[in-house]
Image 1 (cartoon, helix red, strand yellow):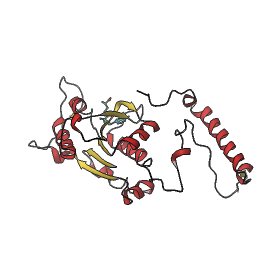
Image 2 (image 1 turned 60 degrees about the vertical axis):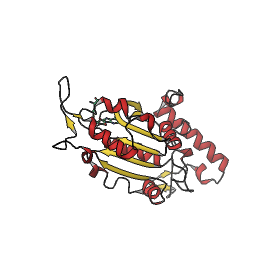
Image 3 (image 1 turned 90 degrees about the vertical axis):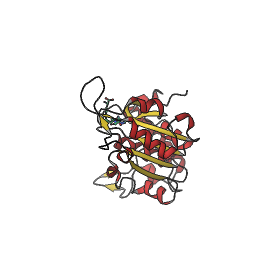
Image 4 (image 1 turned 90 degrees about the horizontal axis):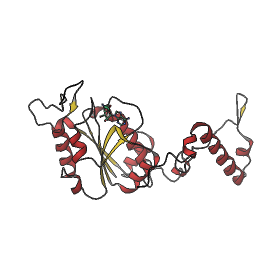
Length: 239
Ligand code: SAH
């Protein structure tokens, strides 16, 4: 997979993709991440990337031209009908559909080239949405100051689902959300820490009993913290 991030703050991404699973995936060339400064595509006199909103009101709006020029540079076209296959251009936005594990899984399965556009200020000129963007994604019902943190969240969640990214010793199959439940509790040594003991079953070596215990605990945790997952309200719409 190739990921291109468009931002007016490229330095923001300094080291965020340099740790753990993401770093390993990059080194193994499972994914490459390229960060582009939108300002490099602002060819107006003052290299402006934002301007005042039509209709008045607070704040600034990100101009369409530099974003169109950046997408043209990366994809060779500014018409989403002409994008190469398995290409998705995503606008990070609180107005997007909410990012879930199922969305991450779909992007990991179906996309080879992901372009992430990070907004700032009041947001991005709507014509970017109209012509360039395949989907608007929100990472949750709150407003961030910029799309950069959201882009890191989306990239991280997608990259760790790419085949081979997790390596053989781990798997995403038991992670929270992949089977509609939260993950079970985990313990490591010491078996007795300040009088708090690891559940006996985990020390028993009885794999069937351990599996059963883990499933029950996952269910218990989901019931107490995220009832909505059990009521099936949380999947990605099948449409
Ligand atoms: N006026 C906008 C908010 C702009 S916040 C509104 O109320 O909808 C500035 C930028 O931060 C947005 O353009 C978007 O790229 C990013 N952003 C803010 N909240 C976000 C969220 N929940 N998910 C993804 N991106 C978000």
